[in-house]
Image 1 (tube, rainbow, N blue to C red):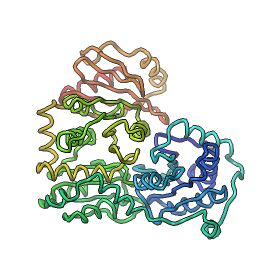
Image 2: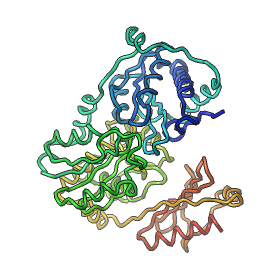
Image 3: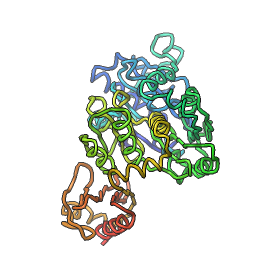
Image 4: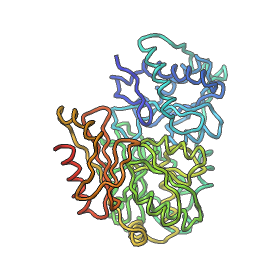
Length: 473
């Protein structure tokens, strides 16, 4: 029997194998029991879903189980971005939220993401409690059910449209008047997901021209994972590159919590670089200050920007929940990760791809330069950073020796001394010149994820070759 296991952002599984209606009912009951134990059940739950197969049906089934447990649900009236649901939890002062999404994963996956009252991703101690409760109940009829009509008549279910409340929040954070005055033309790619009617609508409301692509629901996501990465957006890159009137391309993933940026010439701007650019923009142009948080796998480009402006940098394990916790405690100005997650002080403690795209639009409008021009300017001020990730598949023998190698990391790598070893998530070797490499073992397959950064592409190639030799040798 499949066991329930929560990853960095909820429980995900393949349709009809482990992600089934029965397992969803059990996990929902486990969440209800968790809320009862924590004292938040009476505050109710916001329930949403993305554009995947049967997302709405899973959401309605969850509402029936919650109603059977006596817990009120606010059910979103259409597929809804993850950051919008997060904001709805906060502004309603709800006890938490359940969102049916597998984010950027392929179309044969779905997922259930639980968020506590903070609106951010649940921390490990919370998901462990839900896992334990759910796994203890698998194979049992451990829940009561209530029809949706009965739930609505009893006040245990209410349909909501969370869009306008979220729009009001974003208007406080983004200078739409500035964007409107810019006269820029934006390309928008919502990758067949929940961002449609949000990112495009807010920019049109500002008064700028918008050209959209892939802006209708498709549970197959056009045959690609709904991830705003260049390998999945050839059509969008061509659209931006081949239309001189488009100044900037902006994309969101399946549930709109991640973002992708394509410059006017069709070049994809890595999220590592966007985090550094936006940090610099917030301080230099908008006059903000405060600490910056990034994951251990994220570029130190943002560290150089922070040092330039005298800001503190906080390094977290991989998983946006840790950055979100800093936001929830008002500890940081901006937080981000290399996998295209970003949020700001005063906003939701979860990734918001819509907000990230809008802030990039504002930055380009304010600076009157392309994203690549801004990147070149920033390189001149703080130095260059080149980052890459590769996956190394291990044989049985190498998988057995991997923990030994991590327990005794080398004193030098690629001809440079190791100045610092960071072990908050995997093993990260920071070299004497500031370049670094991070080794993280996959929890589900014999793969080591190797992240590396250097001052230029040649040094980066050399560093990655040395890292591969260390692991595979």
